[in-house]
Structure formats: structure tokens, C-alpha cells
Length: 166
Image (cartoon, rainbow, N blue to C red):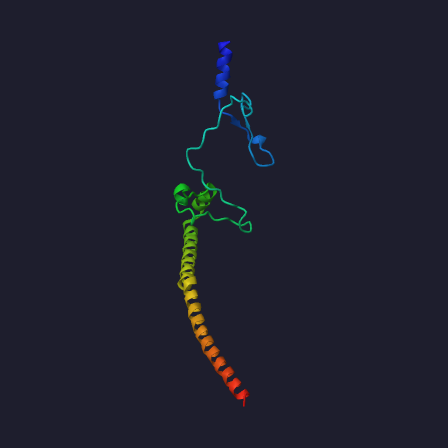
């Protein structure tokens, strides 16, 4: 009787195995346990809460299906939590290339980064605040013209009344 009880305790402590073959159409992975599911039993085990905060999920529905950039502006420490890595296939490609081919590719990449920086600087020079300032000055000038024209209109209407009574 004690052997049977020990075996049941041992089976309860065993971690559930994840079977990749049981993956359904929804993409979820089902778990199987030697003891069976204890979700419906009142004395079943409760799940342990995560101690670490989960990383935010990137919404891949944004955009037109192209490559989605990571959310680095909203999460300033994104690369602290997710260090950059080079895939093994890319490493093999880079290491397999000749020194002159690597130099040529590096030159092209550096030129592209410089063009990107130049574009960002030029576009940032004017910026939206500069455009707003220009438009505000133009609006002020136009408002001054409107005030002058309204004054002339009042003057002309007054003259019209005076000359209309003659």
C-alpha cells in the first residue's frame, strides 16, 4: 500500500511533458502528464505565478506584412533585455566570404548608414516645429491684412450710406 502511495506522489511531482506532435490547428501545444489532468479536481495543483515580468508581445498585425521592427522607442531597454544575435547561417556566410568581399560589403553598409544619418539630419532640420513657426507667421500676416480690409469695408459702407442719401 505504501509503495502505491509513493508511486502516486512521485507521479504527481513529475513535470508534464510537452509533445510537439500534439500541436493543434490553433498553434497551441498540449501537455500530457503521467497522472492525468488535475484541472477539474478540487485538490488539484495550482499554477505558480511568474516571478519575472513577461516581455511585451509584438503586434504583427501592424503594417503590410513586411518585417516588423522591434518597439525600441517605447521600450528604451529593449536591447538590454534582448541582446543582438547573429544567426548561425549568417555567421557561416560572413566567415565563408573572402576578405575583399567582406570589405566591399562593409563599405556599402557604412555608406548606407551615412546616407541614412544624412537623411535623418536633413529631415530633422526643418522639423514640424519649424514648419509650424513659418505657418504661424504667415497666419499673423494674413490676420493683419484681414483687419485692414475689414476697416476699409466699414469705411466704404459708411461712404455708401452717405452718398446714397444725396
